[in-house]
Image (cartoon, rainbow, N blue to C red; front, side, top):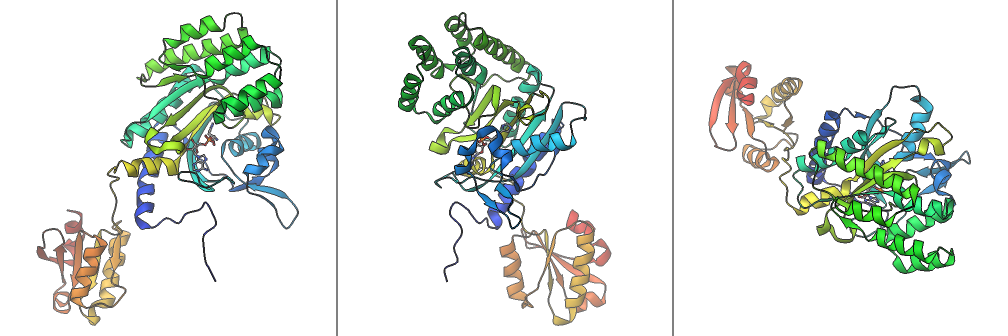
Length: 426
Ligand code: HAM
């Protein structure tokens, strides 16, 4: 029988898990410094949570199934909709903004390739309510701060505003699913299909020209004046542009200058309404997007009040790939700090007693479980990478002593059981 993994999934072994743990705990620390609190939602949800905004087409991209009670369920493809559901069920009366973060796996039925998996992890956040330029700027600054803390090099933050493209389309009476379809074609970077669809939808050539121009616009804040000129008399789009202008000014307060204005960002998910941003690491190639986010109003879509929210998610696996490719020192912790080696069968019981005492003192300890002889004990300890080995000998024990071996220098010190903890910590 062939025991293989499902397509698009991976196993993670010790070293990779340690690296992921270091990165996740760094992100947790930074997010908590910005006063976000962790939440957890179910891995599966009612299918309707994801189809309500995006329609049945999204089902193709989901892992959905019926359970034994005939309920239509889906493995979550992302966490923004689940968090909006949670907010509506339990947090509507909480003071705003509510700042939440999450770390968990997501599932998408995609064609697997490098950096694109069927099970992948997101580390993300949502700020529900309290929309303001400061709130948006703080969230972008936190994303940037996280990557700087991880010492990731060569990342680019691209910032845009969906209200510009959507505003132009709204004023042409192109709304609902048609508008979402156009945004999808822009997101996928399919200029031919886009043109065909715009022609089919009988969009004025003038408007088409402006759309194509805007999609291509990338650069510094100097670009804003050029866009203003282009959008003359298109009030809805101009309103969005002014919002973006204010955000750009506010970002300065957060010492954020190193980003690119990119008005072609359309985002793949159709709940976004305002500011959007994506972070790329170009060296990752086709799957260079390591983060995506923006402003949305899912709560209203779900039948609640208008509570504008902003959030983003790091694609954790792509972030790891970028860090590993740059050979970042992820400060890996070894499996244990100390190895306890009973050097005679008679000292085995005592060895476990010592191990338990140390573990209760917060030291990570491995004890010989393989009943090895001295030589093998030391080579095993060496392979584990521990810094210190406690040799438990019969004669030493009778005198209440233990031998502590420093694996880096090879020095051995005879210490009393009482002094052991102090020596290990030193
Ligand atoms: P998203 O852009 O669809 O946004 O996903 C966020 C990140 O997850 C992407 O930038 C990418 O790095 C990673 N990702 C997506 N699909 C895959 C895959 N198949 N394999 C590996 N990595 C993948 C969202 O999901 C939004 N919920 C983000 C958000 C939060 N917006 C507001 N709040």
